[in-house]
Amino acid sequence: MKKFSLKPNIVYEKESIEYLHKINIKNSLIITDKFMVESGITKKVTDILDEEKAKYEIFSEVKPNPSSDLVVDGVEAMLKLKPDSIIAIGGGSAIDTAKGIILFYMNMMNKSSKEHAVKPYFIAIPTTSGTGSEVTSYSVITDNDTHVKMAFSEDIMLPDLAIVDPDFTKSVPPSVTADTGMDVFTHALEALVSNESSDFTDTLANGVLKIVFSYLLRAYRDGNDTIARQKMHNASCMAGIAFTNSALGINHSMGHAFGARFKVSHGRAVAIFLPYVIEYNSLDSICAYKYSDLAKSIGLPATTIEQGIFSLIESIKVLNRKLGIPVCIKEMDIDKKEFLDEIENMSKTAMEDVCTLGNRKKPTKDDIATIFKKAYEG
Ligand code: NAD
Image 1 (cartoon, rainbow, N blue to C red):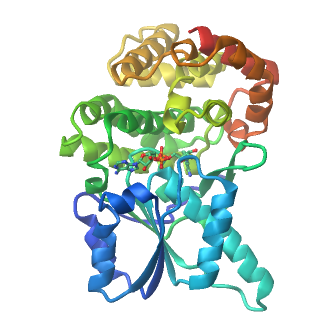
Image 2: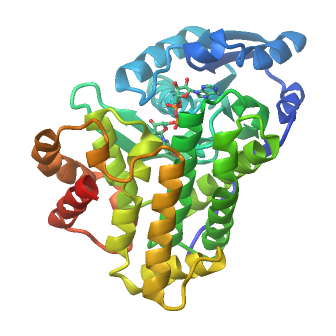
């Protein structure tokens, strides 16, 4: 038996932020970062709360790749305010921080009270088209002591409402558009070939991949291209639905280990491994067929399965290049010896990552190490 859940209500497209008027918010904790406050993005939300005479406080301490210490600070803010709702405004980092805060807050409340604590109504407003965190039960938090990025999944962390309004992404700079857009691509591709994939998730994943091939470069080249921004924002959300109902795989596990160790943005850290992970996964016949079928459906040469896989890999390298993303780690400012010395640790961390469980082809630690080496030289 398989399960496909559609939990958060999703309002989407231009001006969907107006839906906030319909939610009866009395006392909210807004979780975001300093840039969102200083650039006025948060104001789009607080203006509505002011009109509705709702109280709120802003916790704006979020940083990229959020840490466990940040979650602890957020829980303190929750305990002081005891809000009826939480509004996360930002990229995956803000939404994941809010999820971590909710999880720990609810655990504390349930332990300290005889009655079952009521979860604050959780609204996620993504400002990047990337993680799909607004519709997933996943959060990725970096352990302050070990510096390891931990992905974990709990139903309680699923938002109740996702507001997918492309106006919130207009100010995303080109390099962040590129990195986060390739994160969307990687979510859809990993969901497609994961051992948990289904007809439901395949249809979403294939649809998302077509949108990314058609619109990511447009959004990157012109951030004011409202059609491209809207398409990418919808794609990001749909990729989230696909992977939270399917799974991810070693591309994400390796990206988490590499990104945390070498301080590379999440999207870029996963984009760089795509060609090498596709090559490895293609040793499995189902993955090979699905990659080739995708290549055919987007009009790439795919007379044979091998040709389809080759076309897909080359088209991803071309897309990465056009987006200013290196196609191998050698092209980044990372010392070869330092990288090679870290492969053992990163491979161990990647093997332990929850995403590895979703990979259809079961890797050994040596397999992962070999992929890391290939990704360095290209
Ligand atoms: P992010 O949230 O870290 O943001 C990246 C940068 O972009 C930040 O400096 C932020 O201030 C800026 N930014 C965000 N929105 C902007 C806007 N509208 N205009 C201008 N600048 C803007 O980046 P992200 O890629 O969205 O999230 C990455 C995090 O999410 C990582 O920690 C990653 O591991 C995690 N992640 C989570 C999931 C999940 O399902 N929960 C999935 C994938 C990745």
